[in-house]
Image (tube, chains in turn yellow, orange, green):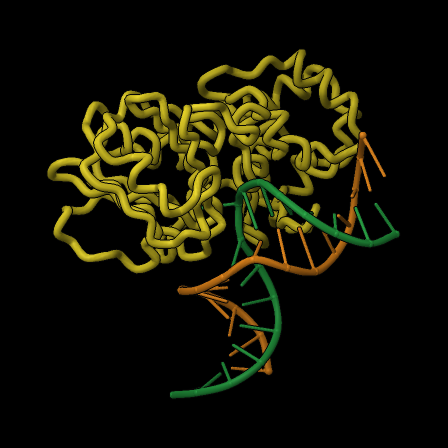
Length: 269
DNA sequence: AACGGAACCTGAAAGC
DNA sequence: TGCTTTCAGGTTCCGT
């Protein structure tokens, strides 16, 4: 269940599992998830190609293959890449598999909001090209972000989740960054001072580093799967005390999405 | 151009 | 217990 940190982990995993290897076989199990090429061409596009590079921008992963082709992967809400052995049967909700020697990598996605996009000649896809700066790979420029925020009527939280403004921040990371910055999620983006935008940039960097740290390990599982405990400060913590103030954390709906914040240390002002 | 809301899917958890 | 409702961290499309 992926925002930037989870996609970064998925990208590192794929690099470890497939980097430099030649794909012996590829199979698409659910044609719905593929874009950019006919489902029937999936195997042909990937088989016998060497994995030349795996990169990430925002929530997108790009797999570059020898011969110039590329495969883009977006995990949607429930997508996941897992490593199995070639002899292992299909996983529940498996949508695609890539085999390379002794490893078999499976794309699993119950809700199928995720996408694989084939680029037969490695041509950039709009979803990748239109992304804003990535906090991890590009870094965020507070002055530039401030200028963008000045030009919209949207709330600050909605803008932070706009992938064309910042690539990779989703509902959790936005809520967490705003809490760290002590900014109310519903504040009009244009009302923020440069100092407040600087605090938000620090908040984004800090929450991403924190989340990444949680998931850093040899056998990675996503944070907050059923049963796991919630490591966040405000996300999913309605009614529980704010770690700063002991005031109960509030929940509100913004643009159809749940937002969590502390009414005391994130005053609307 | 910009915004709210529904749609795309399925499973888990909460509610009754 | 079992049926129903609600909710889920993503994006996209459609009507206003």
